[in-house]
Image (tube, rainbow, N blue to C red; front, top):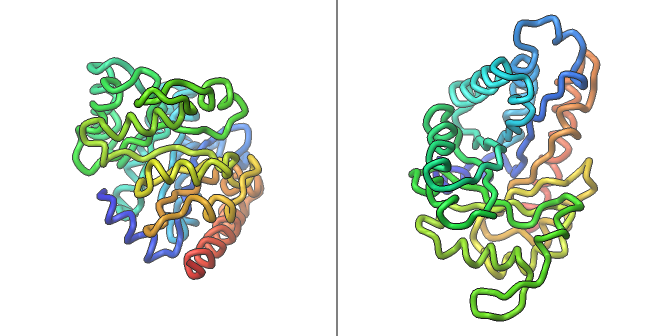
Length: 277
């Protein structure tokens, strides 16, 4: 999917909602456990109930890999279902990969070619040659960790380091600036946590036009209005992720309807923000 196609979907749906598919068998309605593939069937129900309200789905691969080969097959069925039935939806493999060049190339082939995801999250710690193999794929997007929503983000990401011109600045700013020099950097997006809303103004000075994937709204306490106030650009430029707050809205038989209600609340708030801009 091209960036322009994603922008068009945001405009059509008046939404920049991304729904995280983090399926824990201990949290889904118990009747699914009797099915052959409870993870896929749960995902399918959530997707069918919310596809007109969301512009993206983000399966977190750890929640599939934890169940071995069966979990991987559930992931494959989930992405195939989205691609076949709702091809307009932007798909994100939340895999946080990143390794030396040859290994990154294989990760990229796995998620972009075999599974046919539109994008993948990657960790930048190993630098240029660990990220550029992902960027080489046409009409695919690499979503690099920049400033995350977890408490441990302050362990490294906000430390003062020498920037590209020798001046002291936070590490996450150096990561953003350096990534712009990499080959095919136009295929980059960035993860910025909603719990760090006060940082968005500075981030937009460095990457004004890039899409930002924003976890942390809802269950983690991030504010949608604050993120939009400081992080939105002319094309919206945001994908706001909600996982637990939507997919686990109910453990009863009405779970899909309750998930839709929660997704609709976010979509309506997003539509109001877009209209006010």
